[in-house]
Amino acid sequence: MNTAQAIAGRRTCRAFTSEAVPIETIRRILETARQAPSGGNLQPWHVHVLWGRRMREFRGILAGKVQSQPTGEGSEYDIYPPNLKDPYRARRFKCGEDLYATIGISRDDRPARLAQFAKNYDFFGAPMALFFSIERIMGPDQWADVGMFMQNVMLLIHDAGLDSCPQEA
Image 1 (cartoon, rainbow, N blue to C red):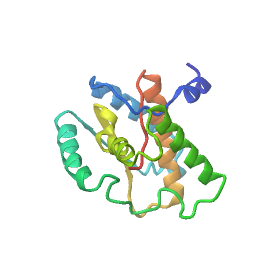
Image 2 (image 1 turned 180 degrees about the vertical axis):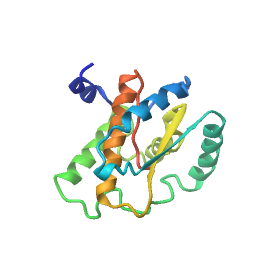
Image 3 (image 1 turned 90 degrees about the vertical axis):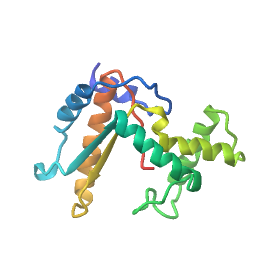
């Protein structure tokens, strides 16, 4: 697979099998992905991998919270700019409409939409989760470094015959 094929073939998966991913596969992916460009070679990212018993425990904690907070606890930062203008607002709206249409959930079916949204907190059934973080002292340039690293991770996951679902939920 060449780079163009990898980029075109990567997709966001929202339905995973429970089949375990060998931890060595993830180690190899992360080791290769760290070759991402990074200003001053800071490599400011941290990655925490959950699988097995810890993943099940974390899912249990989140399942309890989803009952009272189906859309999450909120965020320290705006995931999307407030008062998003067009064409960005229209693209985001269309993306959401298309997503729910593919699974047969109408715009006016709020309970079904919330139930689908809650699957974010079950990682769509994935057997493993990778959490990416950066220290608070880092700025926008380092956030870009982390984004490039994460893209490398997703492309390498695809190259390994697996899927991923990046999210900021």
